[in-house]
Image (cartoon, rainbow, N blue to C red; front, side, top):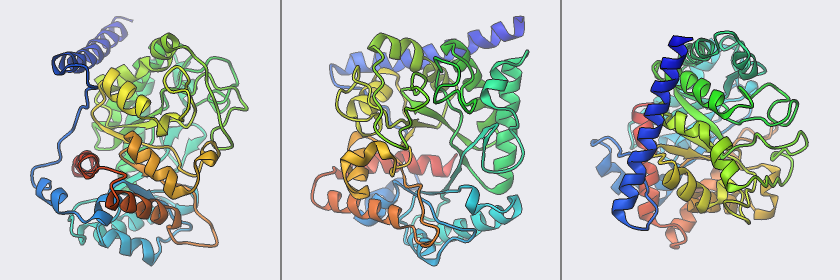
Length: 388
């Protein structure tokens, strides 16, 4: 118990200090929203300035493909320096050895590009039912939250995820889930993807997972900001629009609270949700909302790392037009990485990612997206690519 209390105190102190530092900076700067920025390594800064519009747009795209072997078209995109990362799902993976070979091919293509740096390789290894690779973590987040020594269990799960993914060449895990579930069996609890209905517990356990995993060189992703814990079982953003009407005070005290712990633990990425939160933005889903990404996540909480969307093809985004239009809206809102996750088994080309990249490039060329803002996103992404 004493060890747990000491750990809790340390995490909370770090989290409060991180948020306080950003708020202090914001107060000195005046009324404008603080925009924390993680600089790219010095050896790539001149390169970011020289990127073509297509390369600048491509840094933001996470591509997907069908089957066990990446297509020649994706390798060509990577060699041209027009990719930020690749995501892997179960149909892409036969076993860890096969995946390690694929990752090696993709990384060699990236090192041969004008950027001469490694790609981000992403997958979901949350634990429990949501695992793309066999092996750790075996327990779900809910099982961890119910364990007698839950903090140690969360740390062990993070370390296990780090070892599993590092062994296959993966350097980004789209985990942990920091949603604080409200009702047993609701959308996020149905598959045991939430640690607890207590925001304090979720924050502590999420921070333990993040720290243990990132010490092994695999970047963690806190999701789904600002939170899906109040969604009912039928409120699935993959299938359609979802509106979550929590008050601003509830969002900050419950749903967003674990993110302060995650930021204090040094989390590298945060994924936004596709739900609408009228208390923050009455019109736009979180992942398309400047008020949520730039105002709440960066300004209020002080996150300076890489922001990433959920899958761009989600049913919740149907009112926002084509994949290209959605990508431009997300980039304009402040999303650094754009996740293009759906593939057609009959077409092994990265079509969605290509459409998103082309739309962002066109928006940059015509001034719909500012080049300076795109370069800041590229800088954060390149910093992560250099040191996941």
